[in-house]
Image (cartoon, rainbow, N blue to C red; front, side, top):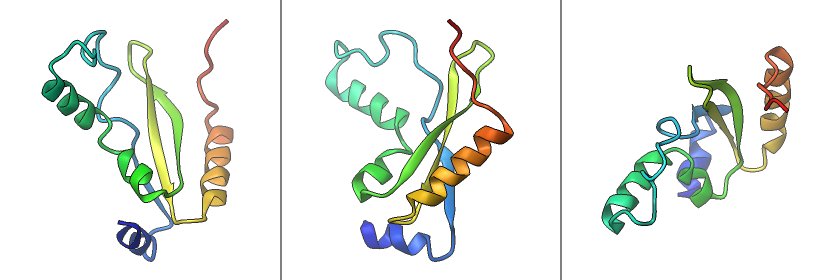
Length: 106
C-alpha cells in the first residue's frame, strides 16, 4: 500500500478528493442499533475517501470549502506525498486567504 501510494506522487504533487461520499446522513442512519452488516456497509460507503490515508499513514488535510443549501458543511481532502505536510498547509492557507472558511455563528 505504501509503495503504491508513494508511486502516485511521482506524477502528482497533490490529490484532491471529497472528504465524505455524501452529506451528513439523517439521524439514525448510522445508529449502532442498525443491523451490523448494514451499518458496516453504510459506514464504508460514507467514508470511502479517507481510509486510504489512514491505512497508508500519509499526509492529508480536510478543508471546509462549502456548504449545502441547508447549511451542512461540505469539505474537500487534499493528500500529498509522504513527508510533504508543508505543501498541504501552504495550500490550505492560500485557499483560506482567497476564500475564507465559513464560520459558525455565535
